[in-house]
Length: 349
Ligand code: GAL
Image: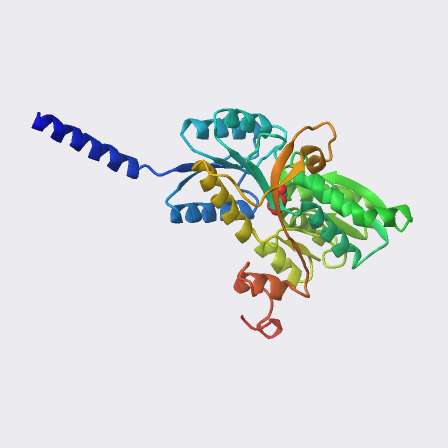
């Protein structure tokens, strides 16, 4: 009898040790690791979760929407308790979210919307304001002439919202006849190389006579700038970006990229991890506001609401890149000013 009690106690102890050693897991599914920000945010997520004793399982879909859905399904099989998703294709990922939600695994759409009313949350930046800043940043330099529009990936709902904001600024000038849109393209996968090719073709078709480019992020803008540089247009024709990447800010201080949009992901990432951990523990989320899917997608056919949170964005050009990006530590001074002669650089903060 004594032996039995001892055995039972030993088993209980083993069980509780095993339980303690088994941390909560959350899954994070990335569209790709090609955009500068994503691998950085993945590392930050892992670190923040570890601080809470939570394990992060990261999957990267290499721009393959079907693979991303398989990976999300696989995360569920691995026993994750919540999933953060950076969708390659906001429409395609909806079925993966629906499937996870039906198994009781809450999903957070991170940065990019997924077109599902079963999301536990959608957290991002004010994406229409991003587009507005891009349009405004360019017309601050040139408000007449032949404009090129380079949208982002057509499967990324953000790309649609950026364009909405850009057009809020440009449309009145187009209506007045001051601006003529001579090319309107979307850059598949947000790939810089695709932007270079598109811009080469546009420049050929227009005989290099373009006055401004509204590009939708730093990666594609720098891609387009390569083609513009080859024609002597870099630094002459204004062009917008987004993300305040190190390379983008370097191009700004060198006078080629006109502006970028600073989205402080150091605020978004902790929010995602905190929410995912809460959801994983079965707790309620606070501070979210309901938005209609139809409004978030500009598509009246979509039904349902999603709890959302949107962070502010800051427009950055040569005048404030130092204050906003360098002083805040968002990008390293040494990288941004790498090719600026020492006597022309601002002091190191
Ligand atoms: C968007 C995102 C941008 C940019 C782009 C390319 O959805 O909001 O910050 O990085 O994707 O990945």
